[in-house]
Every structure is written in structure tokens, then in C-alpha cells.
Length: 205
Image 1 (cartoon, rainbow, N blue to C red):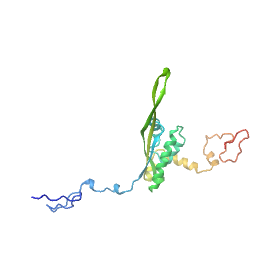
Image 2 (image 1 turned 90 degrees about the horizontal axis):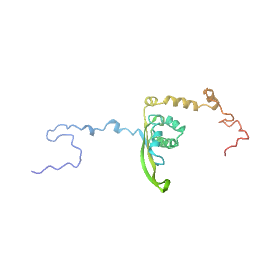
Image 3 (image 1 turned 135 degrees about the vertical axis):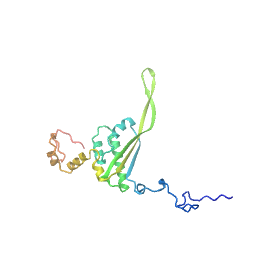
């Protein structure tokens, strides 16, 4: 007895030819509504950063679950040099999100992943003619920003602090000073440039 030929398509028929009944469809074959939606996240990768993963991970752990502008504000005043690397990566991820058509006002830093990159060895000269091995490490950084709903963005960490900071930055310098009771102006400092610096202070060109 000849065997029936196999169907060219891997997808089974909707009707059983022997029993003439509707065949059940597997759950994984049904396209979920989420799969049909556009991707609501963007990724930025920085490769071979000249810093060890241990040092970079300390700064990278500051930004997850933050509104992206609040994350940029935190990294702006971070005293570690790695803050500039993480800040540039977050900015690149937001730029990619805008190119994908996402709303930048609803972006939150979802993940900030640090991985170990390549490293090279160099001699470490010691006393009495001995030589050791010194390793110079490099790191990989990946930042994922995700678009959330308006209510979810408001519930993110330190979002209220960012809104207060944004409203303060929108004011003029004189109005800002009035809302900062603990601010002590430095003598001879005026960001507006209206006051001329003393002659004994050398101006930077």
C-alpha cells in the first residue's frame, strides 16, 4: 500500500480528512495581540569601554527603573568618570527610540546590563628584577529603554523629583534663587553674565 505523500507546508490542515471535524489549533500557533504590536523598547550597545566591569557596574546600577530624564540628571552630577559613558549610552538608546516612533515623554530605563569585554596583558615590573602580569580590562554596556503608559511613568522612582527639577529649570535665574532658600551665591558669580568679573580674576578663553 502506497504511503500518502506529505504536505509541502508544515502547517496542518484545519479539518481532519478522516473524521471530517475541525482540528484544534495549538496555543503557540495563535498569534497573541502582543506579538502583533510594535516593539515598545529600544536598545543601545557600547562595546569595549576602557573600564573594568566591576567599576562600571557601580554607576550602571543607578539608572534602572528611572525616568530617562531623571537618569540623565543623576548621571550629570555623578562624580565618577564612568557616569559619562552610561549617560551617552542612555542618550543613544533614547535617540534610537525616537527613530522607531516611540514617545520620548514615556520612556523609562528598563535595564542597564554590563558585560566583560576583551582584555590584554602587559608586564608589571617589580623589585629584584621580577616581572608580573597586569591585565587591562574592557567592558560592554547595554541600555534598554521601554515605553510605558502615562500612569506607569508617574509611578516610577523619583519621578516627582524630576518634575520639580524641570519646573525649576524652566524659570529664570532670579526666580530660581527665590525658590532655593539654602542657596548661598558665590561672590563674583553671575550665570547671566550681567556682572563683570574682577580684574584680578583671569578669564578662561
